Amino acid sequence: MQPVRSAHRRVDTFLGMLIGTSVLIGLVSSVAIAAPPKTTKPAAATAASASSATKPEIARTQTAWHASLLKLQRPVPGCYTSAFPRVEWKAVECGEAPKYPMPPAHGNA
Image (cartoon, rainbow, N blue to C red; front, top):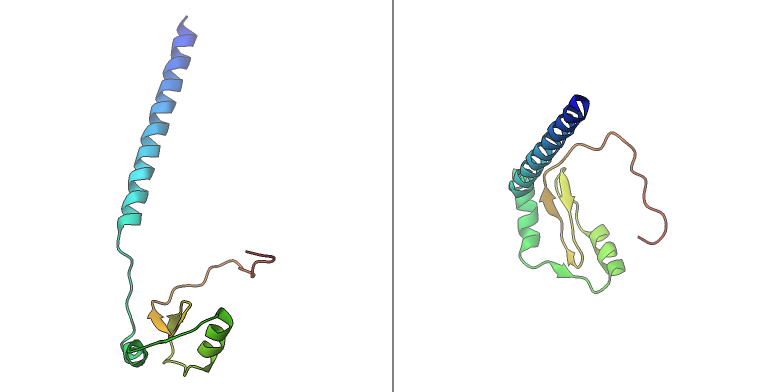
């Protein structure tokens, strides 16, 4: 009966470590999600976006929005984003590009 007890003990030890690790990963991920995101705007970009922040144009269709964004004067060099329907550039923190290729999706996404 000794081998059966040692096998049960090993299984119990393994399950205890597995549960403990799962709890630890859950705690770490919840802390990472709860942390506020870092966003810093470049000083020169705030002046460029301040003029457009007064009253941005609102586009009626995505095609019109895209065409309007192309006509906007380019802000100072940096990283920017925009969201439909507002026709404006908002400065965002630049990040490092991924080390693997990311081709566009095919089909209806």
